[in-house]
Every structure is written in C-alpha cells, then in structure tokens.
Image (cartoon, rainbow, N blue to C red):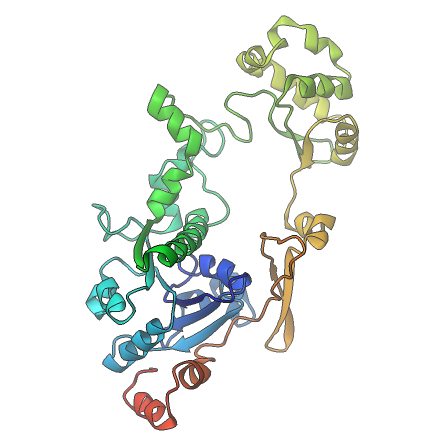
Length: 393
C-alpha cells in the first residue's frame, strides 16, 4: 500500500518507532538512523528476549538501519543526503536537540522543500513543560488517566502498557500520511508537532467533555461503568473472572433470565438503567453471589447462548491461543539469530489485499553500506573517507 513512501526515522524506543512500524508493515521503506551505540530500545532490560529487547523486535521489524554519529559534520551531511531522497522524517528528541545539532526543520527543508518532519515529544515545542522529561508514567499521571483507573479509595494505578508512547506513535503515523497527502496539492512540506500530553488529553474524549461542560470529575470505578449497572467483571467459582455488559434493557432482561432471577426485572429499584445505577450497592452484591456459584466456562456458555454480551478476562496464554488470533493473522514470525521470533501482527487488514510479511529487525547499522551505495550512490572512496572521519561512530 505504501511502497511509494520513504521515511527517515530518527526515533527511539517506542514513541518514535511504533508509528513507523505501522507504516513499514503497510509497505513503506523506513530507514532507521541510529547513533553508533544504537537505539536505546534495543537494550534488553526486563523485556529481553535473548540478546535483544521485545520492544526492538516488535517496533523495528520491516525497517533498515543506518548508523550515523550526528554529532559530526560528516554524519549530519549523510543524513541530509538521505533527507533529499525522503518523503518524511520522524524524530522524538527533546524539542531543542535538532536545532543544537543543526538539522532542524529549516535546515531539512532547505535541502528538500517538500519534506515532512514529524516531531514527537512529551509536551510539544511551546509548552511551559517542554524541557521536562516525559515518560509514560508521567503522562498518565499528569493527564488525569490515573485518577479514573483502579479501585475506589485505593492508590492510583496505570495501564499495563505504555499507552502514551504507543498512541503518540499512532498519531504520528496518521499525521505523517495526512501531511504527505496535503503536499500533493500544495507542493509544500510541513513540521508536525505532536505532544504526548496532548494525545493523552484527547484520549480523555467524552470523559473530558463531560467534565468541561458539567464539572463531573469521574472517579475510579474498578471494572465498572460510571453510569451503567451491571457492567463489570465478576469472579466465578473457579477463581476466574468474566465480564458482562448488558447495556441495553433487553440485555438486562436476558441476563436475569440466564441467572434465573427474572423477578429482578419487576422490582422498582432495578426497573430501569437509572434505578439500577442508583441502587448498584444492593444489586452488585446479589449478582456477585450468583456468579460465585458456577465456574467461568459454564457461565460464559450460558450467557453467550442466552444472548448476553459477556467475555472471559483473559491472560496472555488465553489471548494468544484464541482461534481469532490465527484466523486474523495477529501473530507474525521471522527468523532472528538462528531462531524463530513471534511478534504481534498488524491490525490493519485489506480485504482481498496481500499483507507484508514480517522481516526481522535490522542489526545495528546493518544496512549502512547498501543505503550509501545503492540509494545515495556513494563511491567506495567517499565511504572510506566518511568512516575515517567518524561519521559512523
């Protein structure tokens, strides 16, 4: 789909690489320009799989790697030559870094007037917090997400994935494609400024809109819904949890039928959604006791046969053994260091189209020679001179 698109990636770890992974999965040529020591996301840490990290194995598939020392004049010159051939550049340095290196947007568009630069940072270029470090935990806390997650009257919790980083990557990919499309009409590039803080505020969506217009400050509800009851997880006799989501009235009636408590549908305190929400402290304990009477598999069969929206609360083994995963091809495999590596797949499916097979992430600088000779047409003497000058570290 995107075989016409070339992206130079200066991004690292997750926020600066995840969006480009999506583009690469869709066929874009993504050339990852790394410092001589490599993208920090390569380091194993607690996410290690062998000698490499799960972050690197996931986010850098289908990409090429060129190692450049951008602190050197020679390294920057090579980067500018790459920019001349590209549609877009993606970076997630602090807002002042490109300017200090002499490769800010003005410099990039001087060599390629149509270039699109996507800058991803914690707070954007003009925020009063622009120089502060911004990790996912910081963003989840500052943007109110931790105030609406977890159990009532318990310490704040965060999502189990770095959602701010991941979503910033998704937004960067969308913005990049929009700017490239706009260039077809205007002939002009663009500098896109994406703040992870802004992304997380936008993700407050209707919760933020509700507060802005009514002053309602949503509080933690556990797995429950702030305005619908029942709508939450229930523990079953085998210790496993299932969720039920009888949003509409007919689903509530079907739930009562499955649970053999049809009489609840005629009680005034449970007669409609507003009444059930007002009396959730009475209703939920009653339902909890019922769900504790059978194992989860039995309840799921009964509920689904009865037409009630319900699902298991799966852990990773159940997720990746689900038949949906195989049918929808949501696990990709590639060979790396003599063994098979399995990674999560791409959610974008084109009906009747062919999917890009996952290629292993590149070794550090593994494509430098091919890119310099093939794409840039550098002769051997020039590459040797650049090497001697420390352009590649």
